[in-house]
Image 1 (spheres, rainbow, N blue to C red):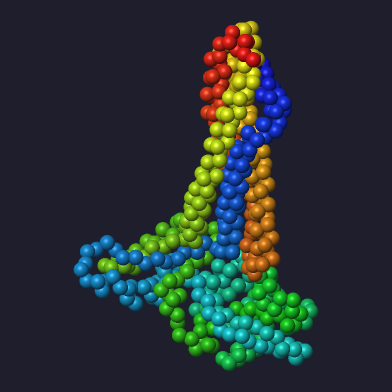
Image 2 (cartoon, rainbow, N blue to C red):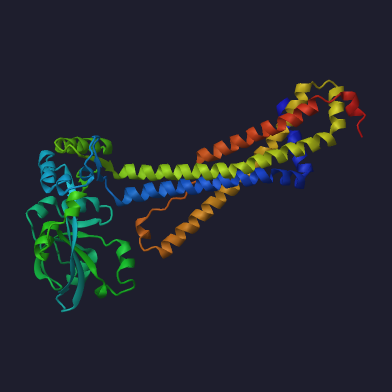
Length: 441
């Protein structure tokens, strides 16, 4: 009852002095709302990054090169040589030893192409070579409708297989005609004519509709055709790219494989391959690790800015202390009456500390609501701006979420501000002499 009575009195004091209470809480409101707004934006960025990465990419692994610890006075030992990089033989050994568990992502654009349908209409295509690893990494972007994806076996056996879009099927084939297994003759501009067998159909991503010929009619739309990587290299007469070997992107064929187990397995494999190299070592890092590093940077930035914003809470706390001292001066006679009828010092002290906490907590709650509203407003404004102006927006899953942890910490901190800055005025009120207080005008 004593506690509830003090809470009632505290709210009564707030209501009786609305403007003064609002001005007093202003520092708390600004501080809390700033912290919540910043953490909401930071949390939303992290969620968006995680959602988009999970949607666009399978688990993948990148390669970093570094020097082993050794002492040398020969500066030339610090230069990379061709023999220091990962070789095709190493990647073939990886494929064989791991039973095809890991694939290398390789892609090569062959060129623009044309083809005529049964109505003699000219269709525009873009032909690219893709390895089994590339197709594995793109399954979340190019959704399979019918047939199958290109495989590593297609690449190794240099098959004339092709994966085409649903838009191409509408352009080229008659309604009801099954395109799987059908051969199409494609003229790759300035390179070759190629007969390709359709093995799979993918759904055209919305991103391609925005990027290529936006607003074009069905027959005028250019679509992507994927063929095996080595097939593209043979048709185009291209030399093997050192870049895809030196810095390969390695993709596991099992999407449910444990990322850390795979990373360690790959690390052990390349450690063995580089055991005889006294200068160079290879570090395998996963795409998840890169996301974690970005999240760490975002966390540091968010915390740093939040701490700066929280300084206004101290200013607000000083305002609370000031107004509590004024309140005590105004209510000196009331304190005297309370002490005259038996109120103990601790009772008076508790009363004013509760008032201070209620004042700060009310300001904190208002700040939280404003912070959440402001953060979500900025988040949705950024989302709409992204969707209308960024051509890859359809590949980004934007998430706007306030941080529950930040809300609870902010409210707890506002209560601590109330206790800390209310303690001195409360102690001063508790120490008043009842006789002097009753005589105070």
